[in-house]
Length: 456
Image (cartoon, rainbow, N blue to C red; front, side, top):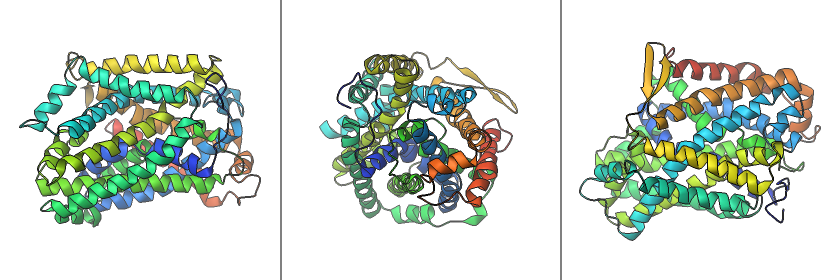
């Protein structure tokens, strides 16, 4: 594609370029802050074992299905379903709503990452109490919005020219750099932090006595959010996948890279936190007040902290490129707005959501939204409510409906022809059919029951 007004239907210049963009979409904040937190809470090594198992049972077949649907339809995430059956475009609309709502808070946190990366690079000073610095920043009415808008503006400008153009070229450099930086930070933390080896042992050695339904549900939920299935990423990116690509091999590679990134993030955070004697179960704050406190006490901590947050910033941008492309492609193709207007509309809607979520940490922090729970109504702030509704409701529903769509509507023959390039890349096995009809739907039901408190 040569200009921003043309429809973005060109194919990826290489398999490597596609894999970097697709894996970059999957690898983001979910890998770096949420995976270590859940792994710690879930018993360390046993959580990793369960997580890898669910990646094989859930992520790989779902990426297969979504990519095949996208390549078959070669359009936006709504139209690709409608090309097979007009009545099933609602899956694509649900994916659009889900991803836009995720971007409401994801871009805000991306702004926090930008702020911390710059703070480490230019001064490394977070005051006597890093938590005070963090809370003061996120509760401010204006400054966090400015940083989130900077992140959003950069992503929008690059996407104006199409995801298979500048974004593909940038991702080829950005994603390998992310892996290298995570490895450097992890090795450094293990060598310098006293007590880090104890944390590494907890993290890597499984204790099967800690296995329970909650660990299983948490791992399944994390795979959904981390790999990025159920929200239109791979139907959107798959529209540009050429027929020469082997979808099954690509899907396995993407799932593998995402899993390695998540495990590497835990390799950085958990040993470092053990060594510093801090609480790993801090959720989003772990990346900010805790990591700032850890690195400032290490020799050369300012440099390694700068590298850590630059790596995280790479992860934020590599994810947002594909997250925002989903709604842009739908506005561009389905709503016939053209590329420029589609970018403007998507950016404007997400920007409005960013303001709301950002203010929810400050002036609007007392405003709560209701959430139905088996024991009664609970109330969440904007960030937590959007996170819960998208990751724990819309994503599993999207996966569940996609399985039904492939199995009942498209049919095994149509799916097999696209997945295997009419038999060139093998056949659809009975095992894969069982995953689609039984295993993946069962896992999604577990996630849905868990978020409403039925399974704890």
